[in-house]
Length: 460
Ligand SMILES: Nc1ncnc2c1ncn2[C@@H]1O[C@H](COP(=O)(O)OP(=O)(O)OP(=O)(O)O)[C@@H](O)[C@H]1O
Ligand SMILES: [Mg+2]
Image (cartoon, rainbow, N blue to C red):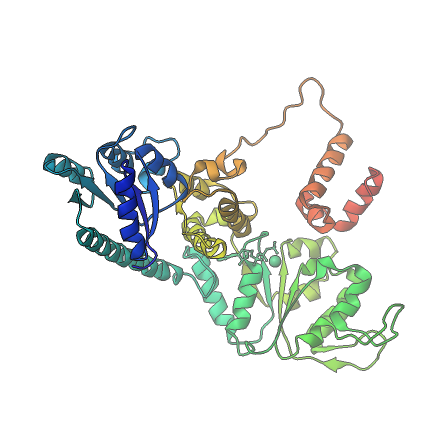
């Protein structure tokens, strides 16, 4: 196999040079270590395809190296168990006993020194062919696992399979769909999947976040405007309804549409026509609407912030995406998926997830759901050169496992409610990087209320 990486562990410099030259001439990439300890250090960051090691070396000999690689894993960082490339040992003439011992320790093969170059090359070739087959098998297994999902959506939990059934059912028609679920549960991904599987797939998929636009601009962003319709309207503008004509319109944070604009919105989806600002001529639009919210719309309706007739229009088909903590069995497949993705993106070998780390990933509550999991795996690739993901490479929040429910300890003095409220608002704003919609949601209040509190506490 071209460009395979060989780690050559040999204390005699001349021997090491000769062997390296033979291997390099055949296109192998060779790294050398002059004893077992150097080899172990090398393995912390690199994953060679094969190790070729001498047995007699000072510091840490070949046997000790094998024991380290194949023995029970009592290293603090898990390198031993996880990094076990096939190993070929080089034994001195007349030490078959050592060779047999080495084979018992898990060596793949042994060669007697001074070794015949052809024999060495043949052995390596054979090992690499076998491990390539194994890798190919692994790839196929991953492929099969991936197809237990749906398109790009991963997960084969009962809850997700129900979602797939729904997607398949609605893809064939034009009904309006309401997708709900916590942040990062895949609402947008599901919406795109529905679009991609519908008859509108070749037409545009237009996405807009209603919470990211000020109330005054929302009208024109949705329905468009004529030139000169208001100060600053220097050119005619198609709203998203028109931009999505023929395709699907994906409206995120639908609960943020202010009451005043809701009748116009209702009319647009009911009549399938919009009236751009500054005109009186309705323009008809042919769209499939997919609306999203991570608020409880029914509660918004009973609180008088959302029109009930609009709610029923949107809620023809309701898809509720379960949070990740309610389908923990999907975590390993998702983690593997992101490992493969970031290995690709960072142009490195896929990392191996240490069983303990996987346990912790599966046990964690994932308030940010799949997006948070994705970030955690990306972080492992960005920060650690190691070939595996162990407990230490996980962020403290994930590593520390479940926390006791009330971590609050006020000591002598319990603070006033107002002081605590101010603290909570500051914390929510910090967490949302100043995004008031997000902060309000985290605090469980609406935007208007948050604004009033910002004024009250002089935080505006
Ligand atoms: N089941 C899944 N399989 C694969 N990837 C997923 C899955 N769910 C979510 N993702 C990925 O996680 C990220 C977040 O998903 P998405 O943007 O669809 O979430 P969302 O529910 O719209 O979140 P928010 O409410 O914060 O907007 C995306 O990168 C998406 O591809
Ligand atoms: Mg989203």
